[in-house]
Length: 385
Image (cartoon, rainbow, N blue to C red; front, side, top):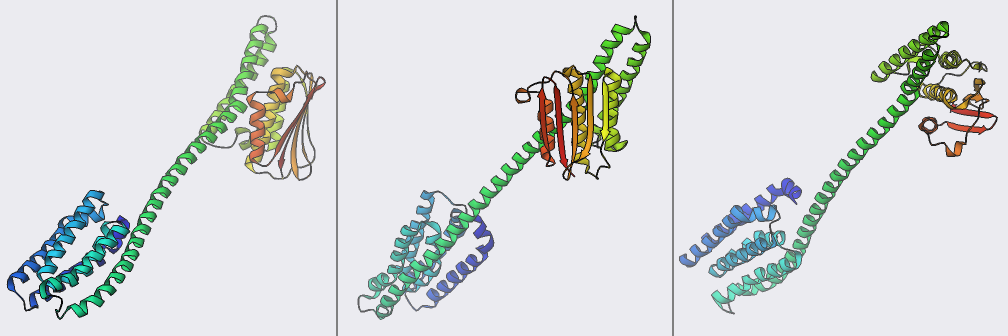
């Protein structure tokens, strides 16, 4: 309700001031008993002060029901005193009727408003008797005022209820926006965690695995085959440098270091050469025709897929030959990695690597398929060209 008050309060204050000043002036100008005039003016002034000093706060701040009833009864009492002292005080009804509807619910406000309007002919009867000159005018006016007062009160209550509903809706929208913002932050945080987990798994973790494998080879060769140990030490140093480069690229939120240093074809070739150097496997790398230009996101998906597939071969396949191929098939760039190793059951693979590759592919509209059996494994990763 505060929203309606903030925008239209000045209109109500103008109505209040005009009603009070006009009614008081008419009472003072009426040629009647000075004592009755003074009582009427005093009651009108008390009514005005009651509203200004207390009533407006009760109405504006949605006071408790008990406070509202006390205000309504006090207003009706002061109105009765003023009107029985001087019937001309009935003009203050232009201020009292809207105030009652702003204070109470519609039905009790309509009853009290009707009672307030009926005070006018009743005061005329008390002061002048049934044959008072004003009674003939007041009776039809009273009927009209009762209908007008109830209808205007219905409109006032409608405005107030709409304002309250709008204020509640705004509050709910603000709460919903805050909740959406919170969920968006949480979703963004979760997505970024997943992205970093995939990046670390596909780069740093695989590099460290290679370094550990090379260190174990060096340990077994240092006494028996120093030349091989030195070669593996060089490979370990190169892998460590590549890991450091990848870590710096991740911190700087850049593209993979292999892609910033060259094309996708070159980056995948380096991964295949590294597998051959570290394991001694026969690795065949083929590129069928020129590849179309891809976005950075799609190139990252293919590069990380190659890294993960070759790392799985290094760790689990026990293969002797490996084939890596990049080709264009039906408006898509396809990466195929095939080995002649022991194979595995893709339906029961619970590692992070395959899930990460599939998630990456889906993010760019691509797809991942894996076929595996006793004669080897073939991984196929496609992204839209």
